[in-house]
Length: 340
Image 1 (cartoon, rainbow, N blue to C red):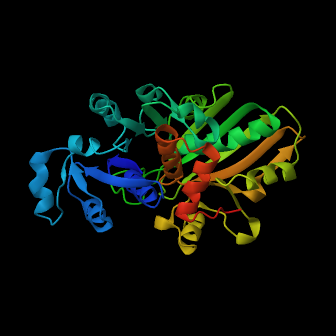
Image 2: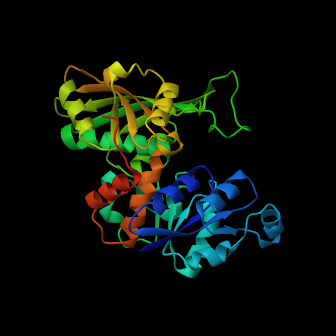
């Protein structure tokens, strides 16, 4: 069994912990918090040993009825792999601790590529992650872009990508973020950081991206255009997407035209936390102009799509399970049934 610690039990960490806990070859040895809040009660209810960054705060947890198993440093000594789901920039500060204890660590997209020196996507470079102490699972937006660009590139060749990210203002439980009644260019200048981040996984892809933030909490939306090197038909592209378990097709007859409706659909089909682990490609939006210009809209669930990538990254650095088998195991354990 691969022993996994989750350092940072928040939006991503709690999802990764649950995904790891249901894998047949993994176990959770602990999760960590910096301060007492509702997530600590969730960890207790899940039966995860809870460790804290600052032991001087032990009373805050134990007075609230949440037992503390020890410090974060103690937690990582019990682990083969640490999934670092701390806020962006904190992971870099944690690296010396992981190095000191000789433990493998997986970082999130909030960290820079240089923090791990290797950016990961299950479908692209799983085998290249083997033997590494540190890898970084790229951000939710980058994960969604990499998945779909890589598939199209392998089938038809991609000459150029242009993508606009319409980003949610905050996660559903984040009451401190906005904007309210505004559309914010993020950044005003081009390109946004998403293009270079895609190139950390797919360095040969020429891509330009732009991004804006809107007042919603349900998912990001991408408008993507790719110039193809070899001609394709719309039907060929749709079949390509249908064959990829992490690219889901939102079918026209569903009547779903928005991120909110898509999130509710995830809830109705019984997904944990209404999570959508795959890209949500709107089938009716898929268009091929003159055989070499592909257009589409896709929804990306910012809280969820990186979760399955983290599970695969654990196997990539801590086991000899092949990529295709890891992807199958991850999805089977989660009861993953793709959209299309």
